[in-house]
Image (cartoon, rainbow, N blue to C red; front, side, top):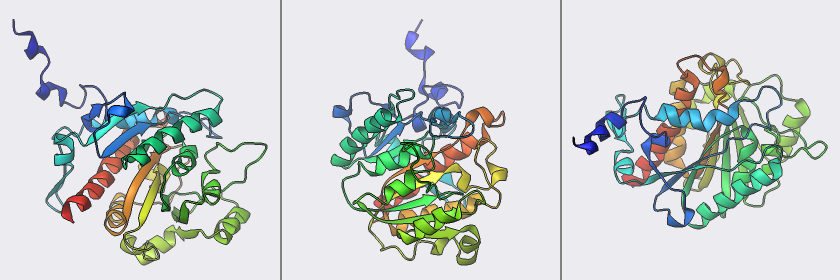
Length: 319
């Protein structure tokens, strides 16, 4: 019997089989041997969530759902275009697994995250960071070497003050970002929650934040939301799944009504990829334990991450 035929590439490309790395990319455990353009890493941390935990499984569930893209590329029938085929076939996407989280020690866990991001930044490798909760953005951005603009897609501004030493929680990240010397600007898009506090909004604007609410999004159109940013400059993008409308994300504990529809966010992400030089991005806050049985929120997360990466990669190939 030919034992090699028991495991075939065709079978491994079914959505329910194969090792769940993101888009079936190669797994690399040794950071000294990285040979890629895009590096996927997970941060299974949800101790910054004040309500219901579970987003620590976000990265795992997104990886699993990404196996459903088994054709070696993402095909956009709207534009009759494939994305990421060469990047996938040439192994330019690498998955390095998860940061080793130390329970109850957010400070040490986030320090580990920053060290890994800094190693990638030094080598000019783009990090694609899968949460976890929104705590992770601050430790990622502080570890990037060059000056950057930050774009946050979210229902909430996440601008709470640090109280009694609680730095590593999901609502403080963007206040902390404003203390970093490498952050040139902060643009917060999709904001609409009535749970945000007025003083935090005042503080964010005073510190230079550009806040674009959902009514403004629909008035201006997704294509015109970053006109205030210098075209071509480096930016980091942070995507909270609750940027999407509540009806689309049952597996999100902080979902809010009135958010982005898929086509709106698709247009915005494409425009960001075209107009700015994206040096990294994260995707956070999927809680698989709350999701419906089909894992629709995790699938939407996998689609969003892969799609945005496809837009970024397409720009590199087009110019």
